[in-house]
Image (cartoon, rainbow, N blue to C red; front, side, top):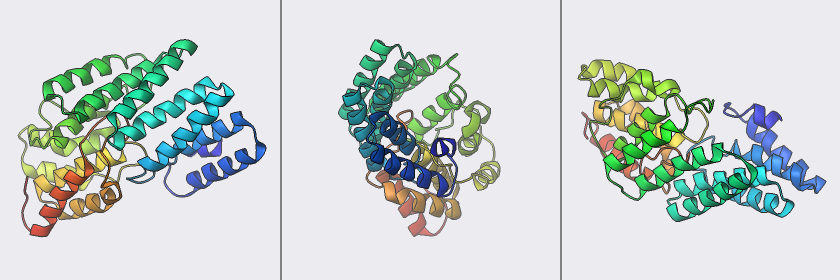
Length: 288
């Protein structure tokens, strides 16, 4: 309970509670207790960039424990965790396989929200596989329509704008903020603002001020994608300080895609690190 309550909070208390809960659960020998503890542990395997392998391992154990004990809800969660992790690791086939397993279980046990979530993973897969911008953007908007009325905090408001922005930035588009408004980005507005200001034709000074106010992303599955938005905006606007922050934060995820949420895809982290490195090596001006 403590680990779950501390989801998304900074510091070591949450991860420590998750680790202790898993250790205690293993001693009980009770699969249901262990499954709940592993579920809590997944919430704390995203405190920094580059932890997709850890999430994949926890998700794999959760699927195994839950399947053997007939715990459908926990098994669905394990598959969804693996969808996210395999997406970050560039394994679109693996992500699709786990999405299919989650859908089948959800159909058998009447869990309609699973279809909503896995529709987003399909969109991410299309983006990763290089589908045309127009096709992926249409899929994003269709997936957004499925969120209406679900009451899923953080998803109903802002996710469409974030997903479109990540897709465009991941593909190196300088007009990534075109047609988007920071007010439509919900809780992601801070990371969207520099791009939307640039696209709206506002002077660079306004975009620079917005970028200077961008905070470190909170712990969570969007951490790589949000750092990509901040880092690439810093390159466009010539902000070495933000570029250095983004470069340091993204370095542990060099072998991953900025797609660990299974909701948005911002391209290979290594590509963004190359751009950041080239900019920082210049020591002057902005580059695209």
